[in-house]
Image (cartoon, rainbow, N blue to C red; front, side, top):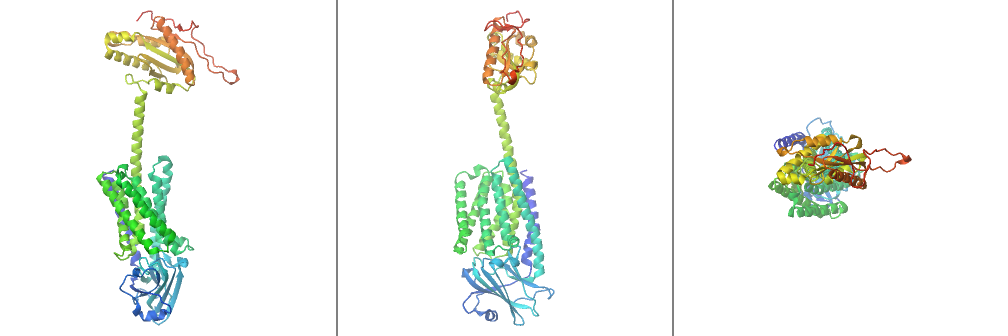
Amino acid sequence: MRGAGPITIGALLLTLLAVLWPLSEARAQVGTSLTSCIRPIHPGDDPRTLLTHPQAFDCTHDQSSYGVGDYWVLSQPLPMVAGDPRDRLAVSFASTWQNATTLHILYADGQIRTIAFTSATTAPYLLLGATIAVPLHHQGTRPVRILWEAHGAANMRGVVRGARIGHYADMLAVESSLGLIYGIIIGVVVGLGVYNLALWPALRQPLQPVYCLLLFFITGYALSSSGLIGQWLPWLDNNERHRWNAIMLGGVALTLVVFSRHFFERKVFEGWLDRMAVICFVLIAIPNVAFALLAPRWILPLDQAVVLGFLVLLIFLITVLVRAWRLRSNFLWAFAIAWGAPIALAMFRVLHAEHLIAWRPWIDQSTVLSMGAEALIASLGVAYRIYLLSRERDLARADERVARRLADTDPLTGLFNRRAFLEQAIGRSGPQTLILADIDHFKRINDTLGHDEGDEVLRIFTRTLGEAVGLDMLVARIGGEEFALLADADRAPDPELLLARLRATSYPSGLTVTASLGLCTGPIADEADWRRLYREADQALFAAKGAGRDRACWGVPIAPAPLPGGLLPVIRPHRKRLGRGTGLCVNGGSSRRS
């Protein structure tokens, strides 16, 4: 997985970008680019005068240097548009924060046609890619110049950006292509979110809900940044769409900080990087919340604060990648491949926001597309992360089972110890027969053969017990040379046959080893039942030893609690009872004193 995985996913990412990038660039290639000049609106300005005498316009400085306000923006003389002159022309430009926009179009015959809309009525002109396309009126002559009248322009990065003139049908054709792409992106992202939410109750990995939240913000950003939400909700004010776009992009940034902390191993974020994550989160959250609540008030300084927050995020993510590489994180390649394109494109967004590079349509559109590709690639990374976590959990559970088995097992014989035997025994339903087996004169065996040979006797004795009882019988070593067996009363082994088998087994140095058995039958529903059953079996064992050893003695059967209706299961004792402490022994036991 470490070798082929990154190569495969990298190839998939390159393939997706190779397919999606030309389509995102197609928007920029529709029509002919227009250059424009700017000047503030003054009382008494006349559109015709401005269209015919453009000397007062500034064509050298960046439009954003004028700040918030009301502006005229004048295009250079319009070029001839190739194609059928009967096809309808349209002028397109990037959607920006403005309260009202009016286009004054000057035609070659001297007529001026006006098209006006507000931020609340932008929807009919809004195309995917957050582009406004305004169809021009059919005239007998061609348009020669366009004058934009913008009121309430935030002018964060220009009043009119990316202006182009072309055939309206071509713009709608690209609209259809981008609609398919955005539909695929949103469908994949929503599907991944539903899939991870469905898996979360089963896997309970904290990474999953964080990833689902990240997918939510990516979906919201794709809807708002592309303008698709404006088409779905035509009543939505275009400036409010910009506000929601900023909120969703901030949500992506904030969630990405939390996502990275959950995605990588804990060692990556130990110490100073963990504190840096908190600082980064705060520096992103404060300006984004302020922008969402206060815009358009103080919109320019708030916008700069948001941009600085994203710059901090880029530094933070690069620092995380470097530290993950130094600590040889298992998840470095998945995070780097998934977020490489969005991080690189975010750098272009920051450079443009700081007016270091000119705006291009692909900067916004390819960010959305790269986030869609990220959602697909990151899903593989998340799946791989969950796979490793699940494997770690399975290994931990296996280790826990081994540790529990070791804690429950007698190390010499491999049988249950007393604690594990009681856990398994108490609560068994129906009458149970408890057999206590004690090796006769075991101290003498240890003194004669030594402790090593004595341990071997215990192991052989254990193996013989295991071969003589059923699979459903519990067998445990509860003392030095004392063993306990428990089985359903109607399936308990015959004590005479058990004694004979133990007696016939070969032991070291040709030694004959015998055992004494104490038996008792009764319920074992709770600990009190166990104490009674064990006391009777132990007294029977004492009686077997007192009667000469190498024999079995029965304790007094214990009747279960009365059942409703007076129905009592009948348990018949094997022999009549003697005095307390003597028990009754089965005939046929060996008469030898071993």
